[in-house]
Image 1 (cartoon, rainbow, N blue to C red):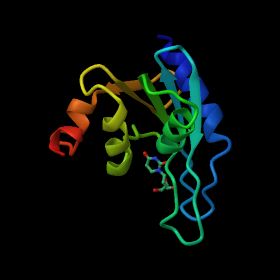
Image 2: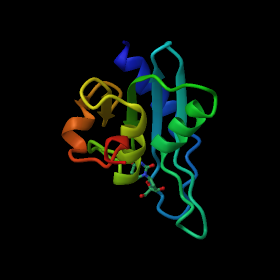
Image 3: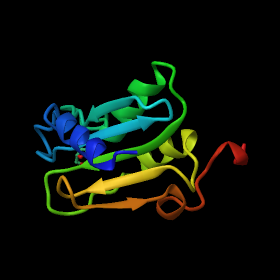
Image 4: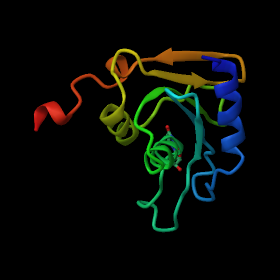
Length: 131
Ligand code: THU
């Protein structure tokens, strides 16, 4: 997997971020097992709660086109900090991704990144196993 390319794609996705309220621009790039990349940005709304995070935009684009096997997601923001997904996005990730092998790549520049697992970021998740 080319992590730097995935980060680059996340920065491309961030260009389309619609964040007039928070002014917090986020981009994500989701890599499928077949090698395709789905990009997503955050999309805000005047009513606030309809806002969709960049990560979920990428997931929903991919799943709506038949993808269900994912290897990694790169996430980038505007700040010089490592951005990790919100709880709702973690919940969506756990629906489709293996908690040990799916890689959550948080980049604060095009070359400086950290990799997390869902196991580390979202222990005790509610999942199909609880139903
Ligand atoms: N946001 C994301 O897109 N991804 C994250 O991981 C954290 C938050 C968005 C939602 C909202 O548009 C803005 O960032 C501020 O919360």
